[in-house]
Image 1 (spheres, helix red, strand yellow):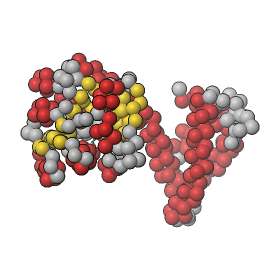
Image 2 (cartoon, rainbow, N blue to C red):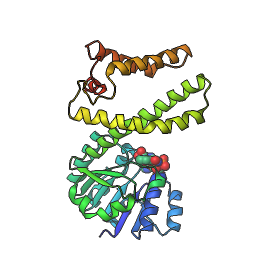
Image 3 (cartoon, rainbow, N blue to C red):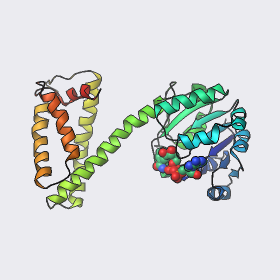
Image 4 (cartoon, protein in one colour):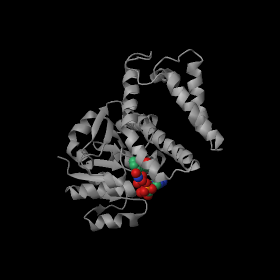
Length: 291
Ligand code: NAD
């Protein structure tokens, strides 16, 4: 059972992590560039350390959550720190790319410490909840040894694999869904309002339509996984049918003078496939164009 944990970074997310650990009874050391941000945590029982070195020395597991890897590197990649890390477990919860995670793993392991890279699939208010997902990759030993602490941060925690970049890669892949949906909503609202519909009407119909969209989303993933690109009896709508409906949207955008940069990019992708005679194929047949 982990007893001593240090959280480097007491911003929105780092503070939520530290609060949750304190709430679960972990002895929690905290450090932040501006010490004032540690005060509310100290009031909850956190032990505020004057330096990164002191935090690392006090704890067996070091959780880092600062703005980005450049900030994290500036904290860690210094002489005194590197030697203090030996024998510790480092859990990097700062967002970064798969490449940064791989490089960090090499550096930490070269200093005789264990490395786990994490991706937080939640906002600070979700930390500590049973449904909250955090993804980890890297040292399986670190994950197994500190599992109860990691699960305290989110009951939906999972281990993605030993390659350190994989948690970040999965995070990036999943975030495409968020931005796809959010940009789609921005475009949808523009069309709705241009045609005199209010956004409450848009919202209520969006929620009714969502199960259909979700089903189509999982269908395109399953079909791509099976490389079932040709249209068949289970095809929900052929590429030709999708394209015909899509033309109405393009027309509406253009008629109302809305910004059509995104729909035009989608139109180009449709056209690439259709120029190769894919009219009857499944929507999933677009997948190879993204590789
Ligand atoms: P924040 O702006 O509230 O906090 C940033 C923290 O980084 C602060 O503690 C600040 O002191 C520290 N920092 C910045 N530059 C520094 C430097 N040069 N040296 C030392 N410390 C430095 O941001 P946040 O929302 O807490 O996000 C922190 C990390 O968590 C980011 O990598 C973010 O992508 C990730 N994250 C945040 C959320 C979220 O919803 N807020 C969700 C998932 C992941």
